[in-house]
Picture 1 (cartoon, rainbow, N blue to C red):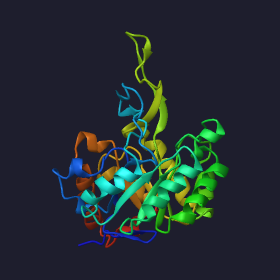
Picture 2 (picture 1 turned 90 degrees about the vertical axis):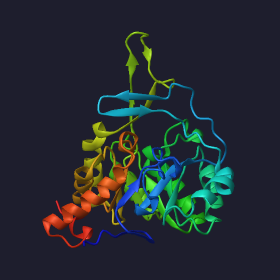
Picture 3 (picture 1 turned 90 degrees about the horizontal axis):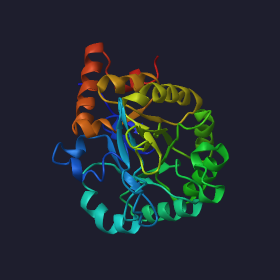
Picture 4 (picture 1 turned 60 degrees about the vertical axis):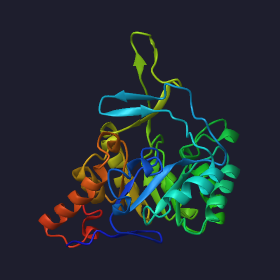
Length: 301
């Protein structure tokens, strides 16, 4: 037996495999396929302060080696989540991690504060890829200054493990990661989706109602792997890697590049049991290669 445990802030994960927000719903959708407690942790869909209908349809499109999405953070708001959804899922895994989104710093803070009032929630993932309405729609995560501001504000009200999810749509992702670390982030997760688009040649119109959307899946993996490698060298806090991880080999690449843990996203749409296959594959790899712990391979390239 090899030791798969890793530590993210105050979280002691039994293994380094998590799920990516936006692809795992609230976990209930996958509970028929496997025992959710087998995961190191799972990150649920984006939660906002107020109810959001999301973007008009069509808002998803298949692309070569991936998919585009422009769902628009559809959810019923944090109060509904805490009163109705969380009681149903809180015992389904050791760590259920809400993903928090907002359009202003005040929204991030109030949403995080409400979640902090639920003592059994030990961690949140802060999605700073959202447009800052007070800055003309520029995403919080594309500027080190605004990224630092929102992390600092949320850090004041949320005492648990604070994971900050970084946008890849920047010139230097390490600059954003260092800003998040400086303002109190316990970990950074990356990458969020890359901005892309698709066009229907018959209608001669964009496929998505929003024209552009977030690209995920195997197509983004080389970019994600490079950014994780760069970030792991730039910060001292744990890095959680994601972006096109479809099997255990992909996951091991991210671990070797410096990720302490990984998240499986789009691949779960193809095979809901992908996270479990990844856990088993990592364990088998470590045994065959003579490692006693997953810690031995993190960042060793």
